[in-house]
Image 1: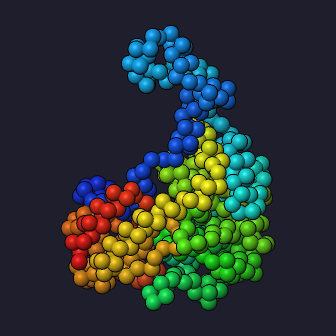
Image 2 (image 1 turned 45 degrees about the horizontal axis):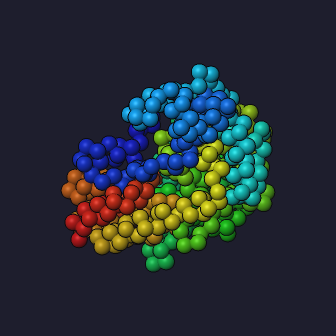
Image 3 (image 1 turned 180 degrees about the vertical axis):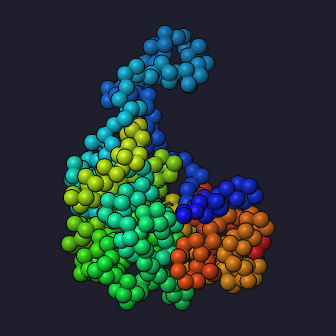
Length: 427
Ligand SMILES: Cc1ncc(COP(=O)(O)O)c(C=O)c1O
């Protein structure tokens, strides 16, 4: 019924053919240290007191604890030193409230107020989940019954239609179209108006957008909001790239738009901002009347997101504004390396406004022009040594995706430079 993810398949093929992996959206760089430290102290410290002790302790204190002379202490393995610090009492490696640690939910409320200007109630509106992926699934299940109609904007993240299929929902697709002259990806407002009806239960929106890099403008958000209010449609917004924006673009959360809070489910996670896609910590901000259903489904499905990693996530979400405001800077050079490499190889591109993907048209690349997206992706993996994702993977209807490949530029500069060098073979 639901097939394996093509994106994850491309990663496996990248490993098999030793290709530079620009397919799946995860980095090869370190996770954010404060966040990692938060998880380490939770796991080792075991309790709040244990965490506080670890925050304060110096190497001198530890040496006295292990009653060792300086030389033997210096020769100790770090693992053995840390073992002496492990608390014999424990809270943070155990089950915690299924819907999330109270301190993390409060932190999500503070964070949302800081960046989106509204404050969700940690008790009634916030649920900590296993990444945005579970956040979307659980929300869809809480909102929809089998056979309900939902609107998905294509190109999309592949989990949207796959989850809709598992839940027996009926997706209707609205297609973003590239204008290669203006270098924009555009929402056809008439198409949205036609797709949205009083039978539509929900609309899934992703901004900043994967795979096109589009950032929906305030005007577009207002338009989508007005259609949804008019036809009584709920909105699920996937905002996991909210801080990765270029050229002064701004991200607007649908929940911050007048009259939308009560019909919007904000889905977010630390995967991208924390460089921690493997941690599986995310959250849902839901209208309070849906929160009990969301929490019930979440508890039954997965119980909870890992407790020590929630403690780490809390540190990430408490970092200064500066960390978030500067996040895009890390990607600007990477984006430029990829843009230049793709230009050089005659790909058609609309530079991304946000997120860290580039959806490139390959029809003018001589070696690829007559190939299907999967054939083009396989050629790039086997002959050029670069892994991408075939464009048709992001579409359900029409042949819009047949000229595209998606490149992810969230890797290290060195990895991207190696990818760029390999792409020179296409010239
Ligand atoms: C738009 C979008 N939503 C959700 C996810 C998955 O997020 P998470 O790791 O929080 O489940 C991805 C991952 O690439 C994504 O691009």
